[in-house]
Image 1 (cartoon, protein in one colour):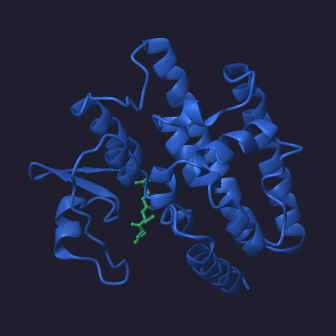
Image 2: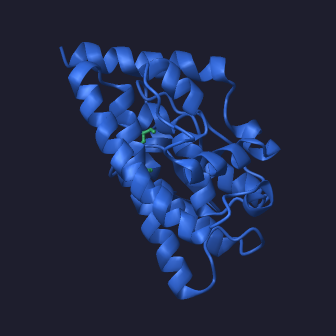
Length: 221
Ligand SMILES: N[C@@H](CCC(=O)N[C@@H](CS)C(=O)NCC(=O)O)C(=O)O
């Protein structure tokens, strides 16, 4: 799963827009996949796929790195320094594997299962919050996120629509008291017009999230 949530913020589009690279966006219908998708991503048959000069690249994190290496202009998604880059990759994978997944589980469960999922997500958010405080000891301001690096894009994807996530899940997910750093980061990111352009308004998110929640709860009995 994770798909219904990832759909809300298109990470590849965010990177292309951040760098000002013109692109054509083609929507795929997952219930009626196109011939082009089969041809471009024959292994997984999933989006996103970036087609550059006729050549396909699949898997969002690989596409993001390809974009950064192919269009080297600012903003750089990954730092130049190899150690800094390794750290960004480490946290990028933490956000994608732990936080995306945790938020998905909270949104698609209820009762005791949801309580447990929220407890686990909170533990991961606390770790992330504490570690990121070392990078941003004074909290995150709008100036720091102007350039939209890789971690900014992933934090937007995970938490930017937190109000919609909370409304649908019926629990508090991003608590400023518990996760002050993540909260200041998300608040700064949500003030950027390029982020506002990419994240649908609250109304546009609640419906699709509710659909994902209902179908998952329904199918698990
Ligand atoms: N690890 C892949 C995940 C891709 C993925 O799950 N794509 C979903 C859309 S968000 C999809 O194409 N689902 C259609 C399907 O599974 O048939 C990535 O990050 O690119």
